[in-house]
Image 1: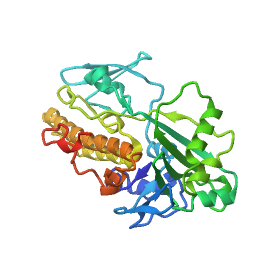
Image 2: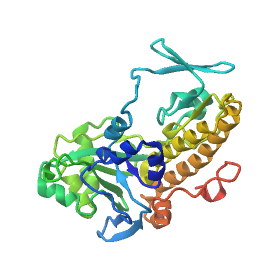
Image 3: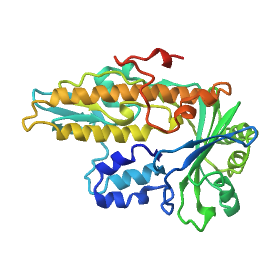
Image 4: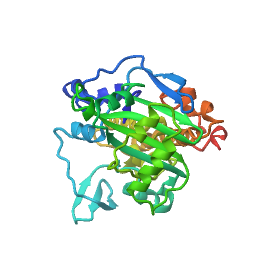
Amino acid sequence: MGLHWSLPQLESLLSPELWARLKEAQNDPFMEAQEGDVMKVYNGLTGDVLAALPIQGKIIRVSRRKFRAFLAQGLNVHYGHTLSGITYGSDDVTAEFENGKEVRGTLIVGCDGPRSKVRDLLLGEEKAKVTPLELVHSNTAVVYGDAEKAKFVRSTHPIFSMACHPDAFCFIAIQDVPDPNKPETWRFQIVTSWFGHRDPSMDNAARLAQVKQKASFLCEPFRSANLWMPDDTKISYDQVSYWISTPWDTQKGRCTLAGDAAHPMTPHRGQGMNHGICDVANLVATLKSLHADQSNLAPSIEEYSAEVVRRGADEVIGSRKQALMLLDWDQLMHSPMMKHGLQKSRLENVAPNGGVSDAARM
């Protein structure tokens, strides 16, 4: 997961001690992020650089597993709880769990992922359900076990790079570096996708063969990154889906959403985690602004939620457009990433009233 424009907000949320140790959560904890880096997009046909998109500030990639453990330090996280219901009182709210436990508090924040149960309860399952994209999306972790192969796959950029081809898209990122002097141990994330439908009858060997066939026409090192996958590589096809953020009833300031629960988006513009961190920073500021008697709780949470909806809907729409345009050779250079890189969205896809703008309709 890439962190870029949200890094200043993340710093504001962490203690100085944790912020100083953030490299521990990086995919490559031995690498120092550089100011003024670029994200290279390659022509998958020729190997030429289509674009070198400037990155404002720094970019780091973190491991989901490492980052979650890093942020959980010092916290008492209760696992094994599945939300079943929410009950609202006059001055409190109670979360009910399938294991029979109940927890009462002032505010519930649903940050429970793209298929959020809290969102279901706030909006109803039909309004809250995600919409799938007709993409085959292979997201694979690979260790090549060969130093020269690993160095070649990483040769385009130490963090990530991508190639666009009329028939497929490929993304390479370093996922884990146990030892910088032993490239044979490095783990990579290889994403390969194309327009189509997933075939549930395919076994792992058939999926691996299909990925290699699709990648066989790509330029290097994207071609070899796929063709060198060992025979026992686990291949799964992710369901890429999205939900355009829609206003929800905060129940007088007792319940709201954040992160993927508020704006589940496709990963093709690398924005999801950054918006999630932005949500948290804004929510913390909102909670700090509450009066001692919490008399402004309802309007404050309403204001927070409205901003999340407008910003979230804008990026969900933009990331959806990006996902489709990456595989549309005629539209690729007009895609949101090619125009804006990894910058924070500019609210071009939503009207002032929160609806979808005319420019965003496809």
